[in-house]
Length: 389
Image (cartoon, rainbow, N blue to C red; front, side):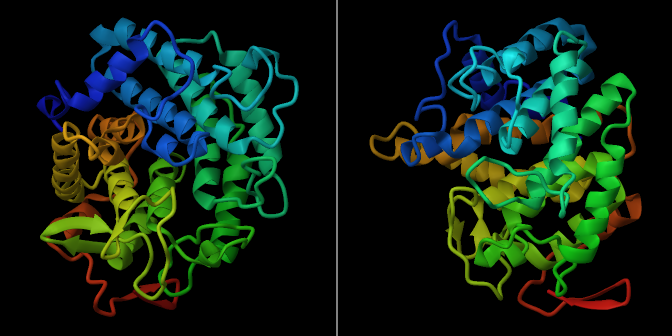
């Protein structure tokens, strides 16, 4: 979507390749991940960062096949670090020896995406473990609400993570000509449509077990995350969610486009998932929306968001050299932020699949018809229901 000069020489690419080139690895530090300054265990952002690295590097490998050997080595290194004892939730010395993957859906979804990236780059050493994890994730998801548990002692199950789970199995199917994801995808989409659709907006709700007040709400970081993954295995549904997301949660701050973390009607607080929220605009929601925009092929919105996110990154890089402020700057420069941004600006379809957004829809955003007016009541009709944003 973006031309080569946009990412070539990008500090995010250098930071990631430098990180993967370190000879020793004993886990992520507080310099690698901002969250480690607050939560020592990292809130799962270590495996999420590695997952986005794998996607970004695979984007580059596909676009420049003559450099495939270089990127193949880097993607393999991502996999190696994802299997490190400091990252994986198992006591085994090797992921290959784990006999029961358990209720670790969050780790496994990202691990499986990494293995899918390896497969797409022609690294088939992990095919057996990739198949085992894929089958386990499908079995884990086939419960009452078609959402897998994400951690053994956490009752919440986020719709966005289930989209990532299905995407990870879809990657295995694409790489090895199987259909493991198909039945789960259909059942999950049906459940989401019937039981997890926010009546006032048409957006998918956040958390299926209803353990939090915001469980019934669409959240910016979750919707953007969900759209990115769903754009591959259910492009039409992802495009529709993207449209509602723009209608109901897009906003502007100081002339810069961004996305709300919560609807104006809901009073929510920032969380480690959302990052800071400034006058309603979510930092994570906006950064993840750039990734979603390139996934659905909305070039116009992607350009707007790149300008917004790029400005925040430049500011963070500038204060990175100022004592005391350097810790704050990592919100926009750490490995997770760098990997998500690089994934967004290098985006390419891995298998030549058609993007979920239509040219008509993309044009409507360009002409301003799809931009947000969250201060006004925008009326959208879908399946006979009136949606008020």
